[in-house]
Image (cartoon, rainbow, N blue to C red; front, side, top):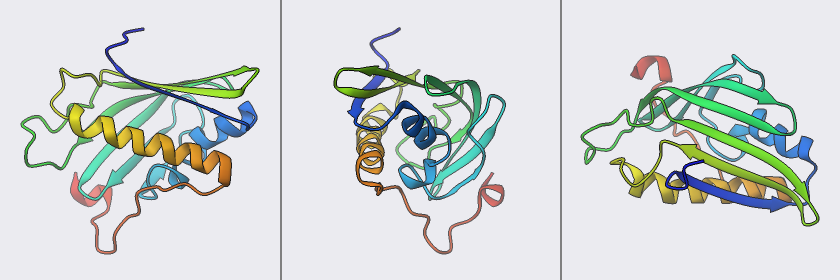
Length: 159
């Protein structure tokens, strides 16, 4: 594991199956409600958007209640300050679930997101926010996902 990549861990009182379900079936409840497709099984694909920022992921590994891996296949980061707006393409988001005496630990490693990529200073605090949203969803049932604005173009319109 490259420790230079973005990584964040949380521990919750939920069961591993509840944590796994949050990552595979409830993305809209903690990350963005502008999502289409599926993220529950190996080979599933989904599109997710945050206004003009849009990404497509494929599930490349899915071990129920233990691990899920998303490979970013397409990305457009809608920030005028970025020279390279598709930096996430080829990066992997690896979710690992373990149990210890404190509860269920969830570790997210974004392989390829490190200080050498142009968007790091924006993506790092955004991940912090959304991991906190995921933790809130798991502990209270309510996260703080991005909400699609009325009038936003659909993913297919913006490609």
